[in-house]
Image 1 (cartoon, rainbow, N blue to C red):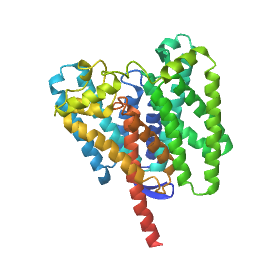
Image 2 (cartoon, rainbow, N blue to C red):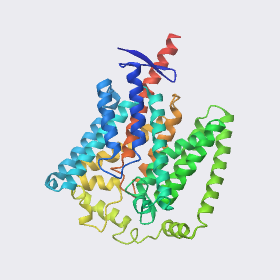
Image 3 (cartoon, helix red, strand yellow):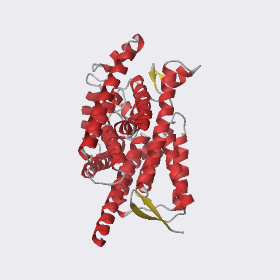
Image 4 (cartoon, helix red, strand yellow):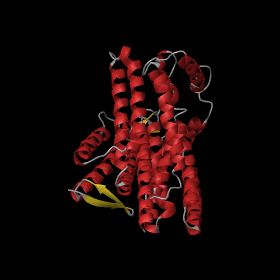
Length: 418
């Protein structure tokens, strides 16, 4: 049974009944919300994504031609990983790493195909789910840090840093950036009641990011927020919209600084903040520090066409690569080492070209693009190649780009017929 689904004024043919469409959108919400609960394996995110993938393929999911370069890049990337891992597959952790990499590639295609149709509605459900999940993760992180739940401090913190429903405080902070950007968009754009609710949500998420004591997440939130707001000003249709965005951004910045000042009045927070804000960390400095390892690892990569295999870098150096691009070379040789940055930076370049495309989901696009670019930058100093939300954003970017091209064609046809 065919029907016409309308998303922001664009009619999209979809091979599903209205009830199936509602189910599909609900599953997108569930995947977004479950992305915040990943401290156990298999996590609710894996289960929800698998369930949604099966349901979407059963009820109608199309692979568009524009997505074929993405498929090719993901396959080549993981073929490189797999070839390099062949001598190491007797190690369970390496086999698990390879399986996870292929699974992440599947999730990219899932999000790309899902968001390429019924785009505005599905993105809205994904946004809602991410915000709900982020609030759960943030509140649990705050409760654990301040010991508001009996026994929660040990479970919800790590090394006196809030981690909430994540295994690592750094990943918690990174995950919260995109939902925080969604909340910030509402603060500067929506009516008072909705904006006020999102002020509270943005404050809670920002507090959780602060208590995660992740320097990358701190900088990521500030830089991606500024980048997104700048894009919103540039793409606003009226001067009134631009003025409101600028004024509300200034108010949000003042309130944020006030929140930080209050928190720093607590000695324990101030001491940890001072420690984490320092740029002379022992693991960053020296020949075998973070950046020294990057140089030495790059020199090794030039001489190793097949790399050294996944999870092997620590056998040669004190710690892991803490650089996703270097890790691609070391884990998958030259094939993966070329494909990974090519995939990531091609997405960024194409993404920049679609900033000013007038589509009904432009606001969501700006938030996802800003968060994605932030993670791409963060990948130079930390391993992001198995972050679930990173691959989710990558897939969503390609899905929105594919939908934008279809939208432009449809709009052109409507204009010609008129």
